[in-house]
Length: 183
Image 1 (spheres, one colour):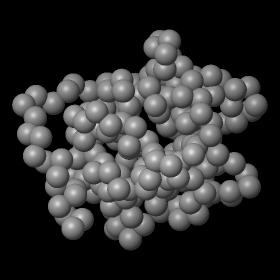
Image 2: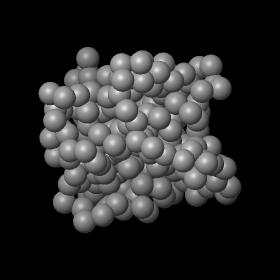
Image 3: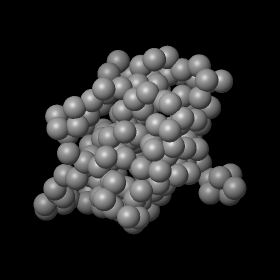
Image 4: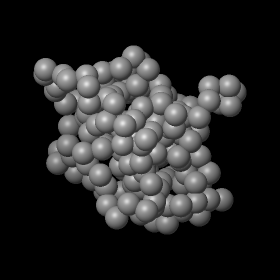
């Protein structure tokens, strides 16, 4: 069904995600990562388009540099975007069908990827536990614990907050930055 929707990298946020998760990058592009958050927060289709691009980058990708960059973009977006994005990320389908699938034994990912995915699932389960419509991640986390999956030790008190304040005084013209840089 995805083929009916076109290339996930053809949207402004999709193009930014493609650039921010390019395996040839030496390190994270934090300016671009925050630009992605802005587009998600300030456009109607931003959350949906971003999730499509993230799914495309993660599904079956054996370039673990790209996977790690994508997980960082995803984490940044969860921390800096609102409910519309959270509602898509915290579904059982996304957590179990996309994130947990990355670390399945048949994919044999490096330990750093496994730890990152497990840490994200754990942090999001804790953060969204009290939001009834965002508990897909909580259910997946609890199932994984019941199956004996060990999560990395983390001090939840020292983690950055998930819910950050919204921007004030938005300049809509910056949405075209990713698109214009691509041309």
